Length: 261
Ligand code: 5RP
Image 1 (cartoon, rainbow, N blue to C red):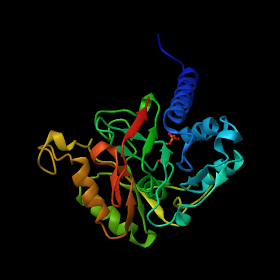
Image 2: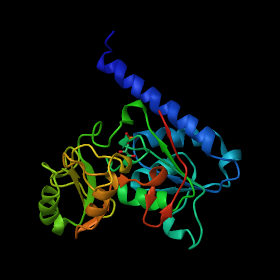
Image 3: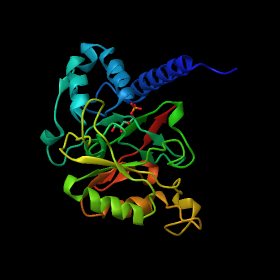
């Protein structure tokens, strides 16, 4: 039986909401005081689920956003807003909740569909535990199979043409600067004043698939591609969240990653 577009949209929203409520139930412990809040439409349900716990449960908690959208969400829900820049050195968030655009078998992620990837990575890297909340559409065996728009890459605007050239040399056939939101001319501008390039690559291999950086058909492994992309001059951050247990970014590892579908 085929579903209509309306039914499918409803199913997706139900799945996001269920995933979010389950993630909060499983991973927001009453003793936690510092919580990272990511960006995107799934995170709206995460904040809804947290707010539904009521002030008695959340009054001692501070919430750290990954950009202007989550900042507004936290404030609108009446939760206490705090900034990652105020987190003292040597301290960590107890947990960070965020969505993803795609999740592979090893829980590597593509993120940045909402253009917030740089702050998202900083908040995730500051947390003891990173909880990825994703609906059923997001899981795929290889990154790039479900999310076909490309890997979001945050770049310095003056470097964009050179970065596009380099991405093509690395095998991305159609990298492009992400346009502004409807009604806004020019490129999208991130919360950090930078641009986003979306770079599609052939579906990425996992390290277990090959010992080389690339497979015989030229497909990159997640790690090798990430290492190459981050080294391009002008690239600020990339939307690949990858590594052992799904998230191993420059400043350390946060485990475990839980994904909900
Ligand atoms: C924003 C992100 C989001 O987490 C990702 O795009 C998923 O969004 P949604 O929950 O709306 O599907 O990385 O930069």
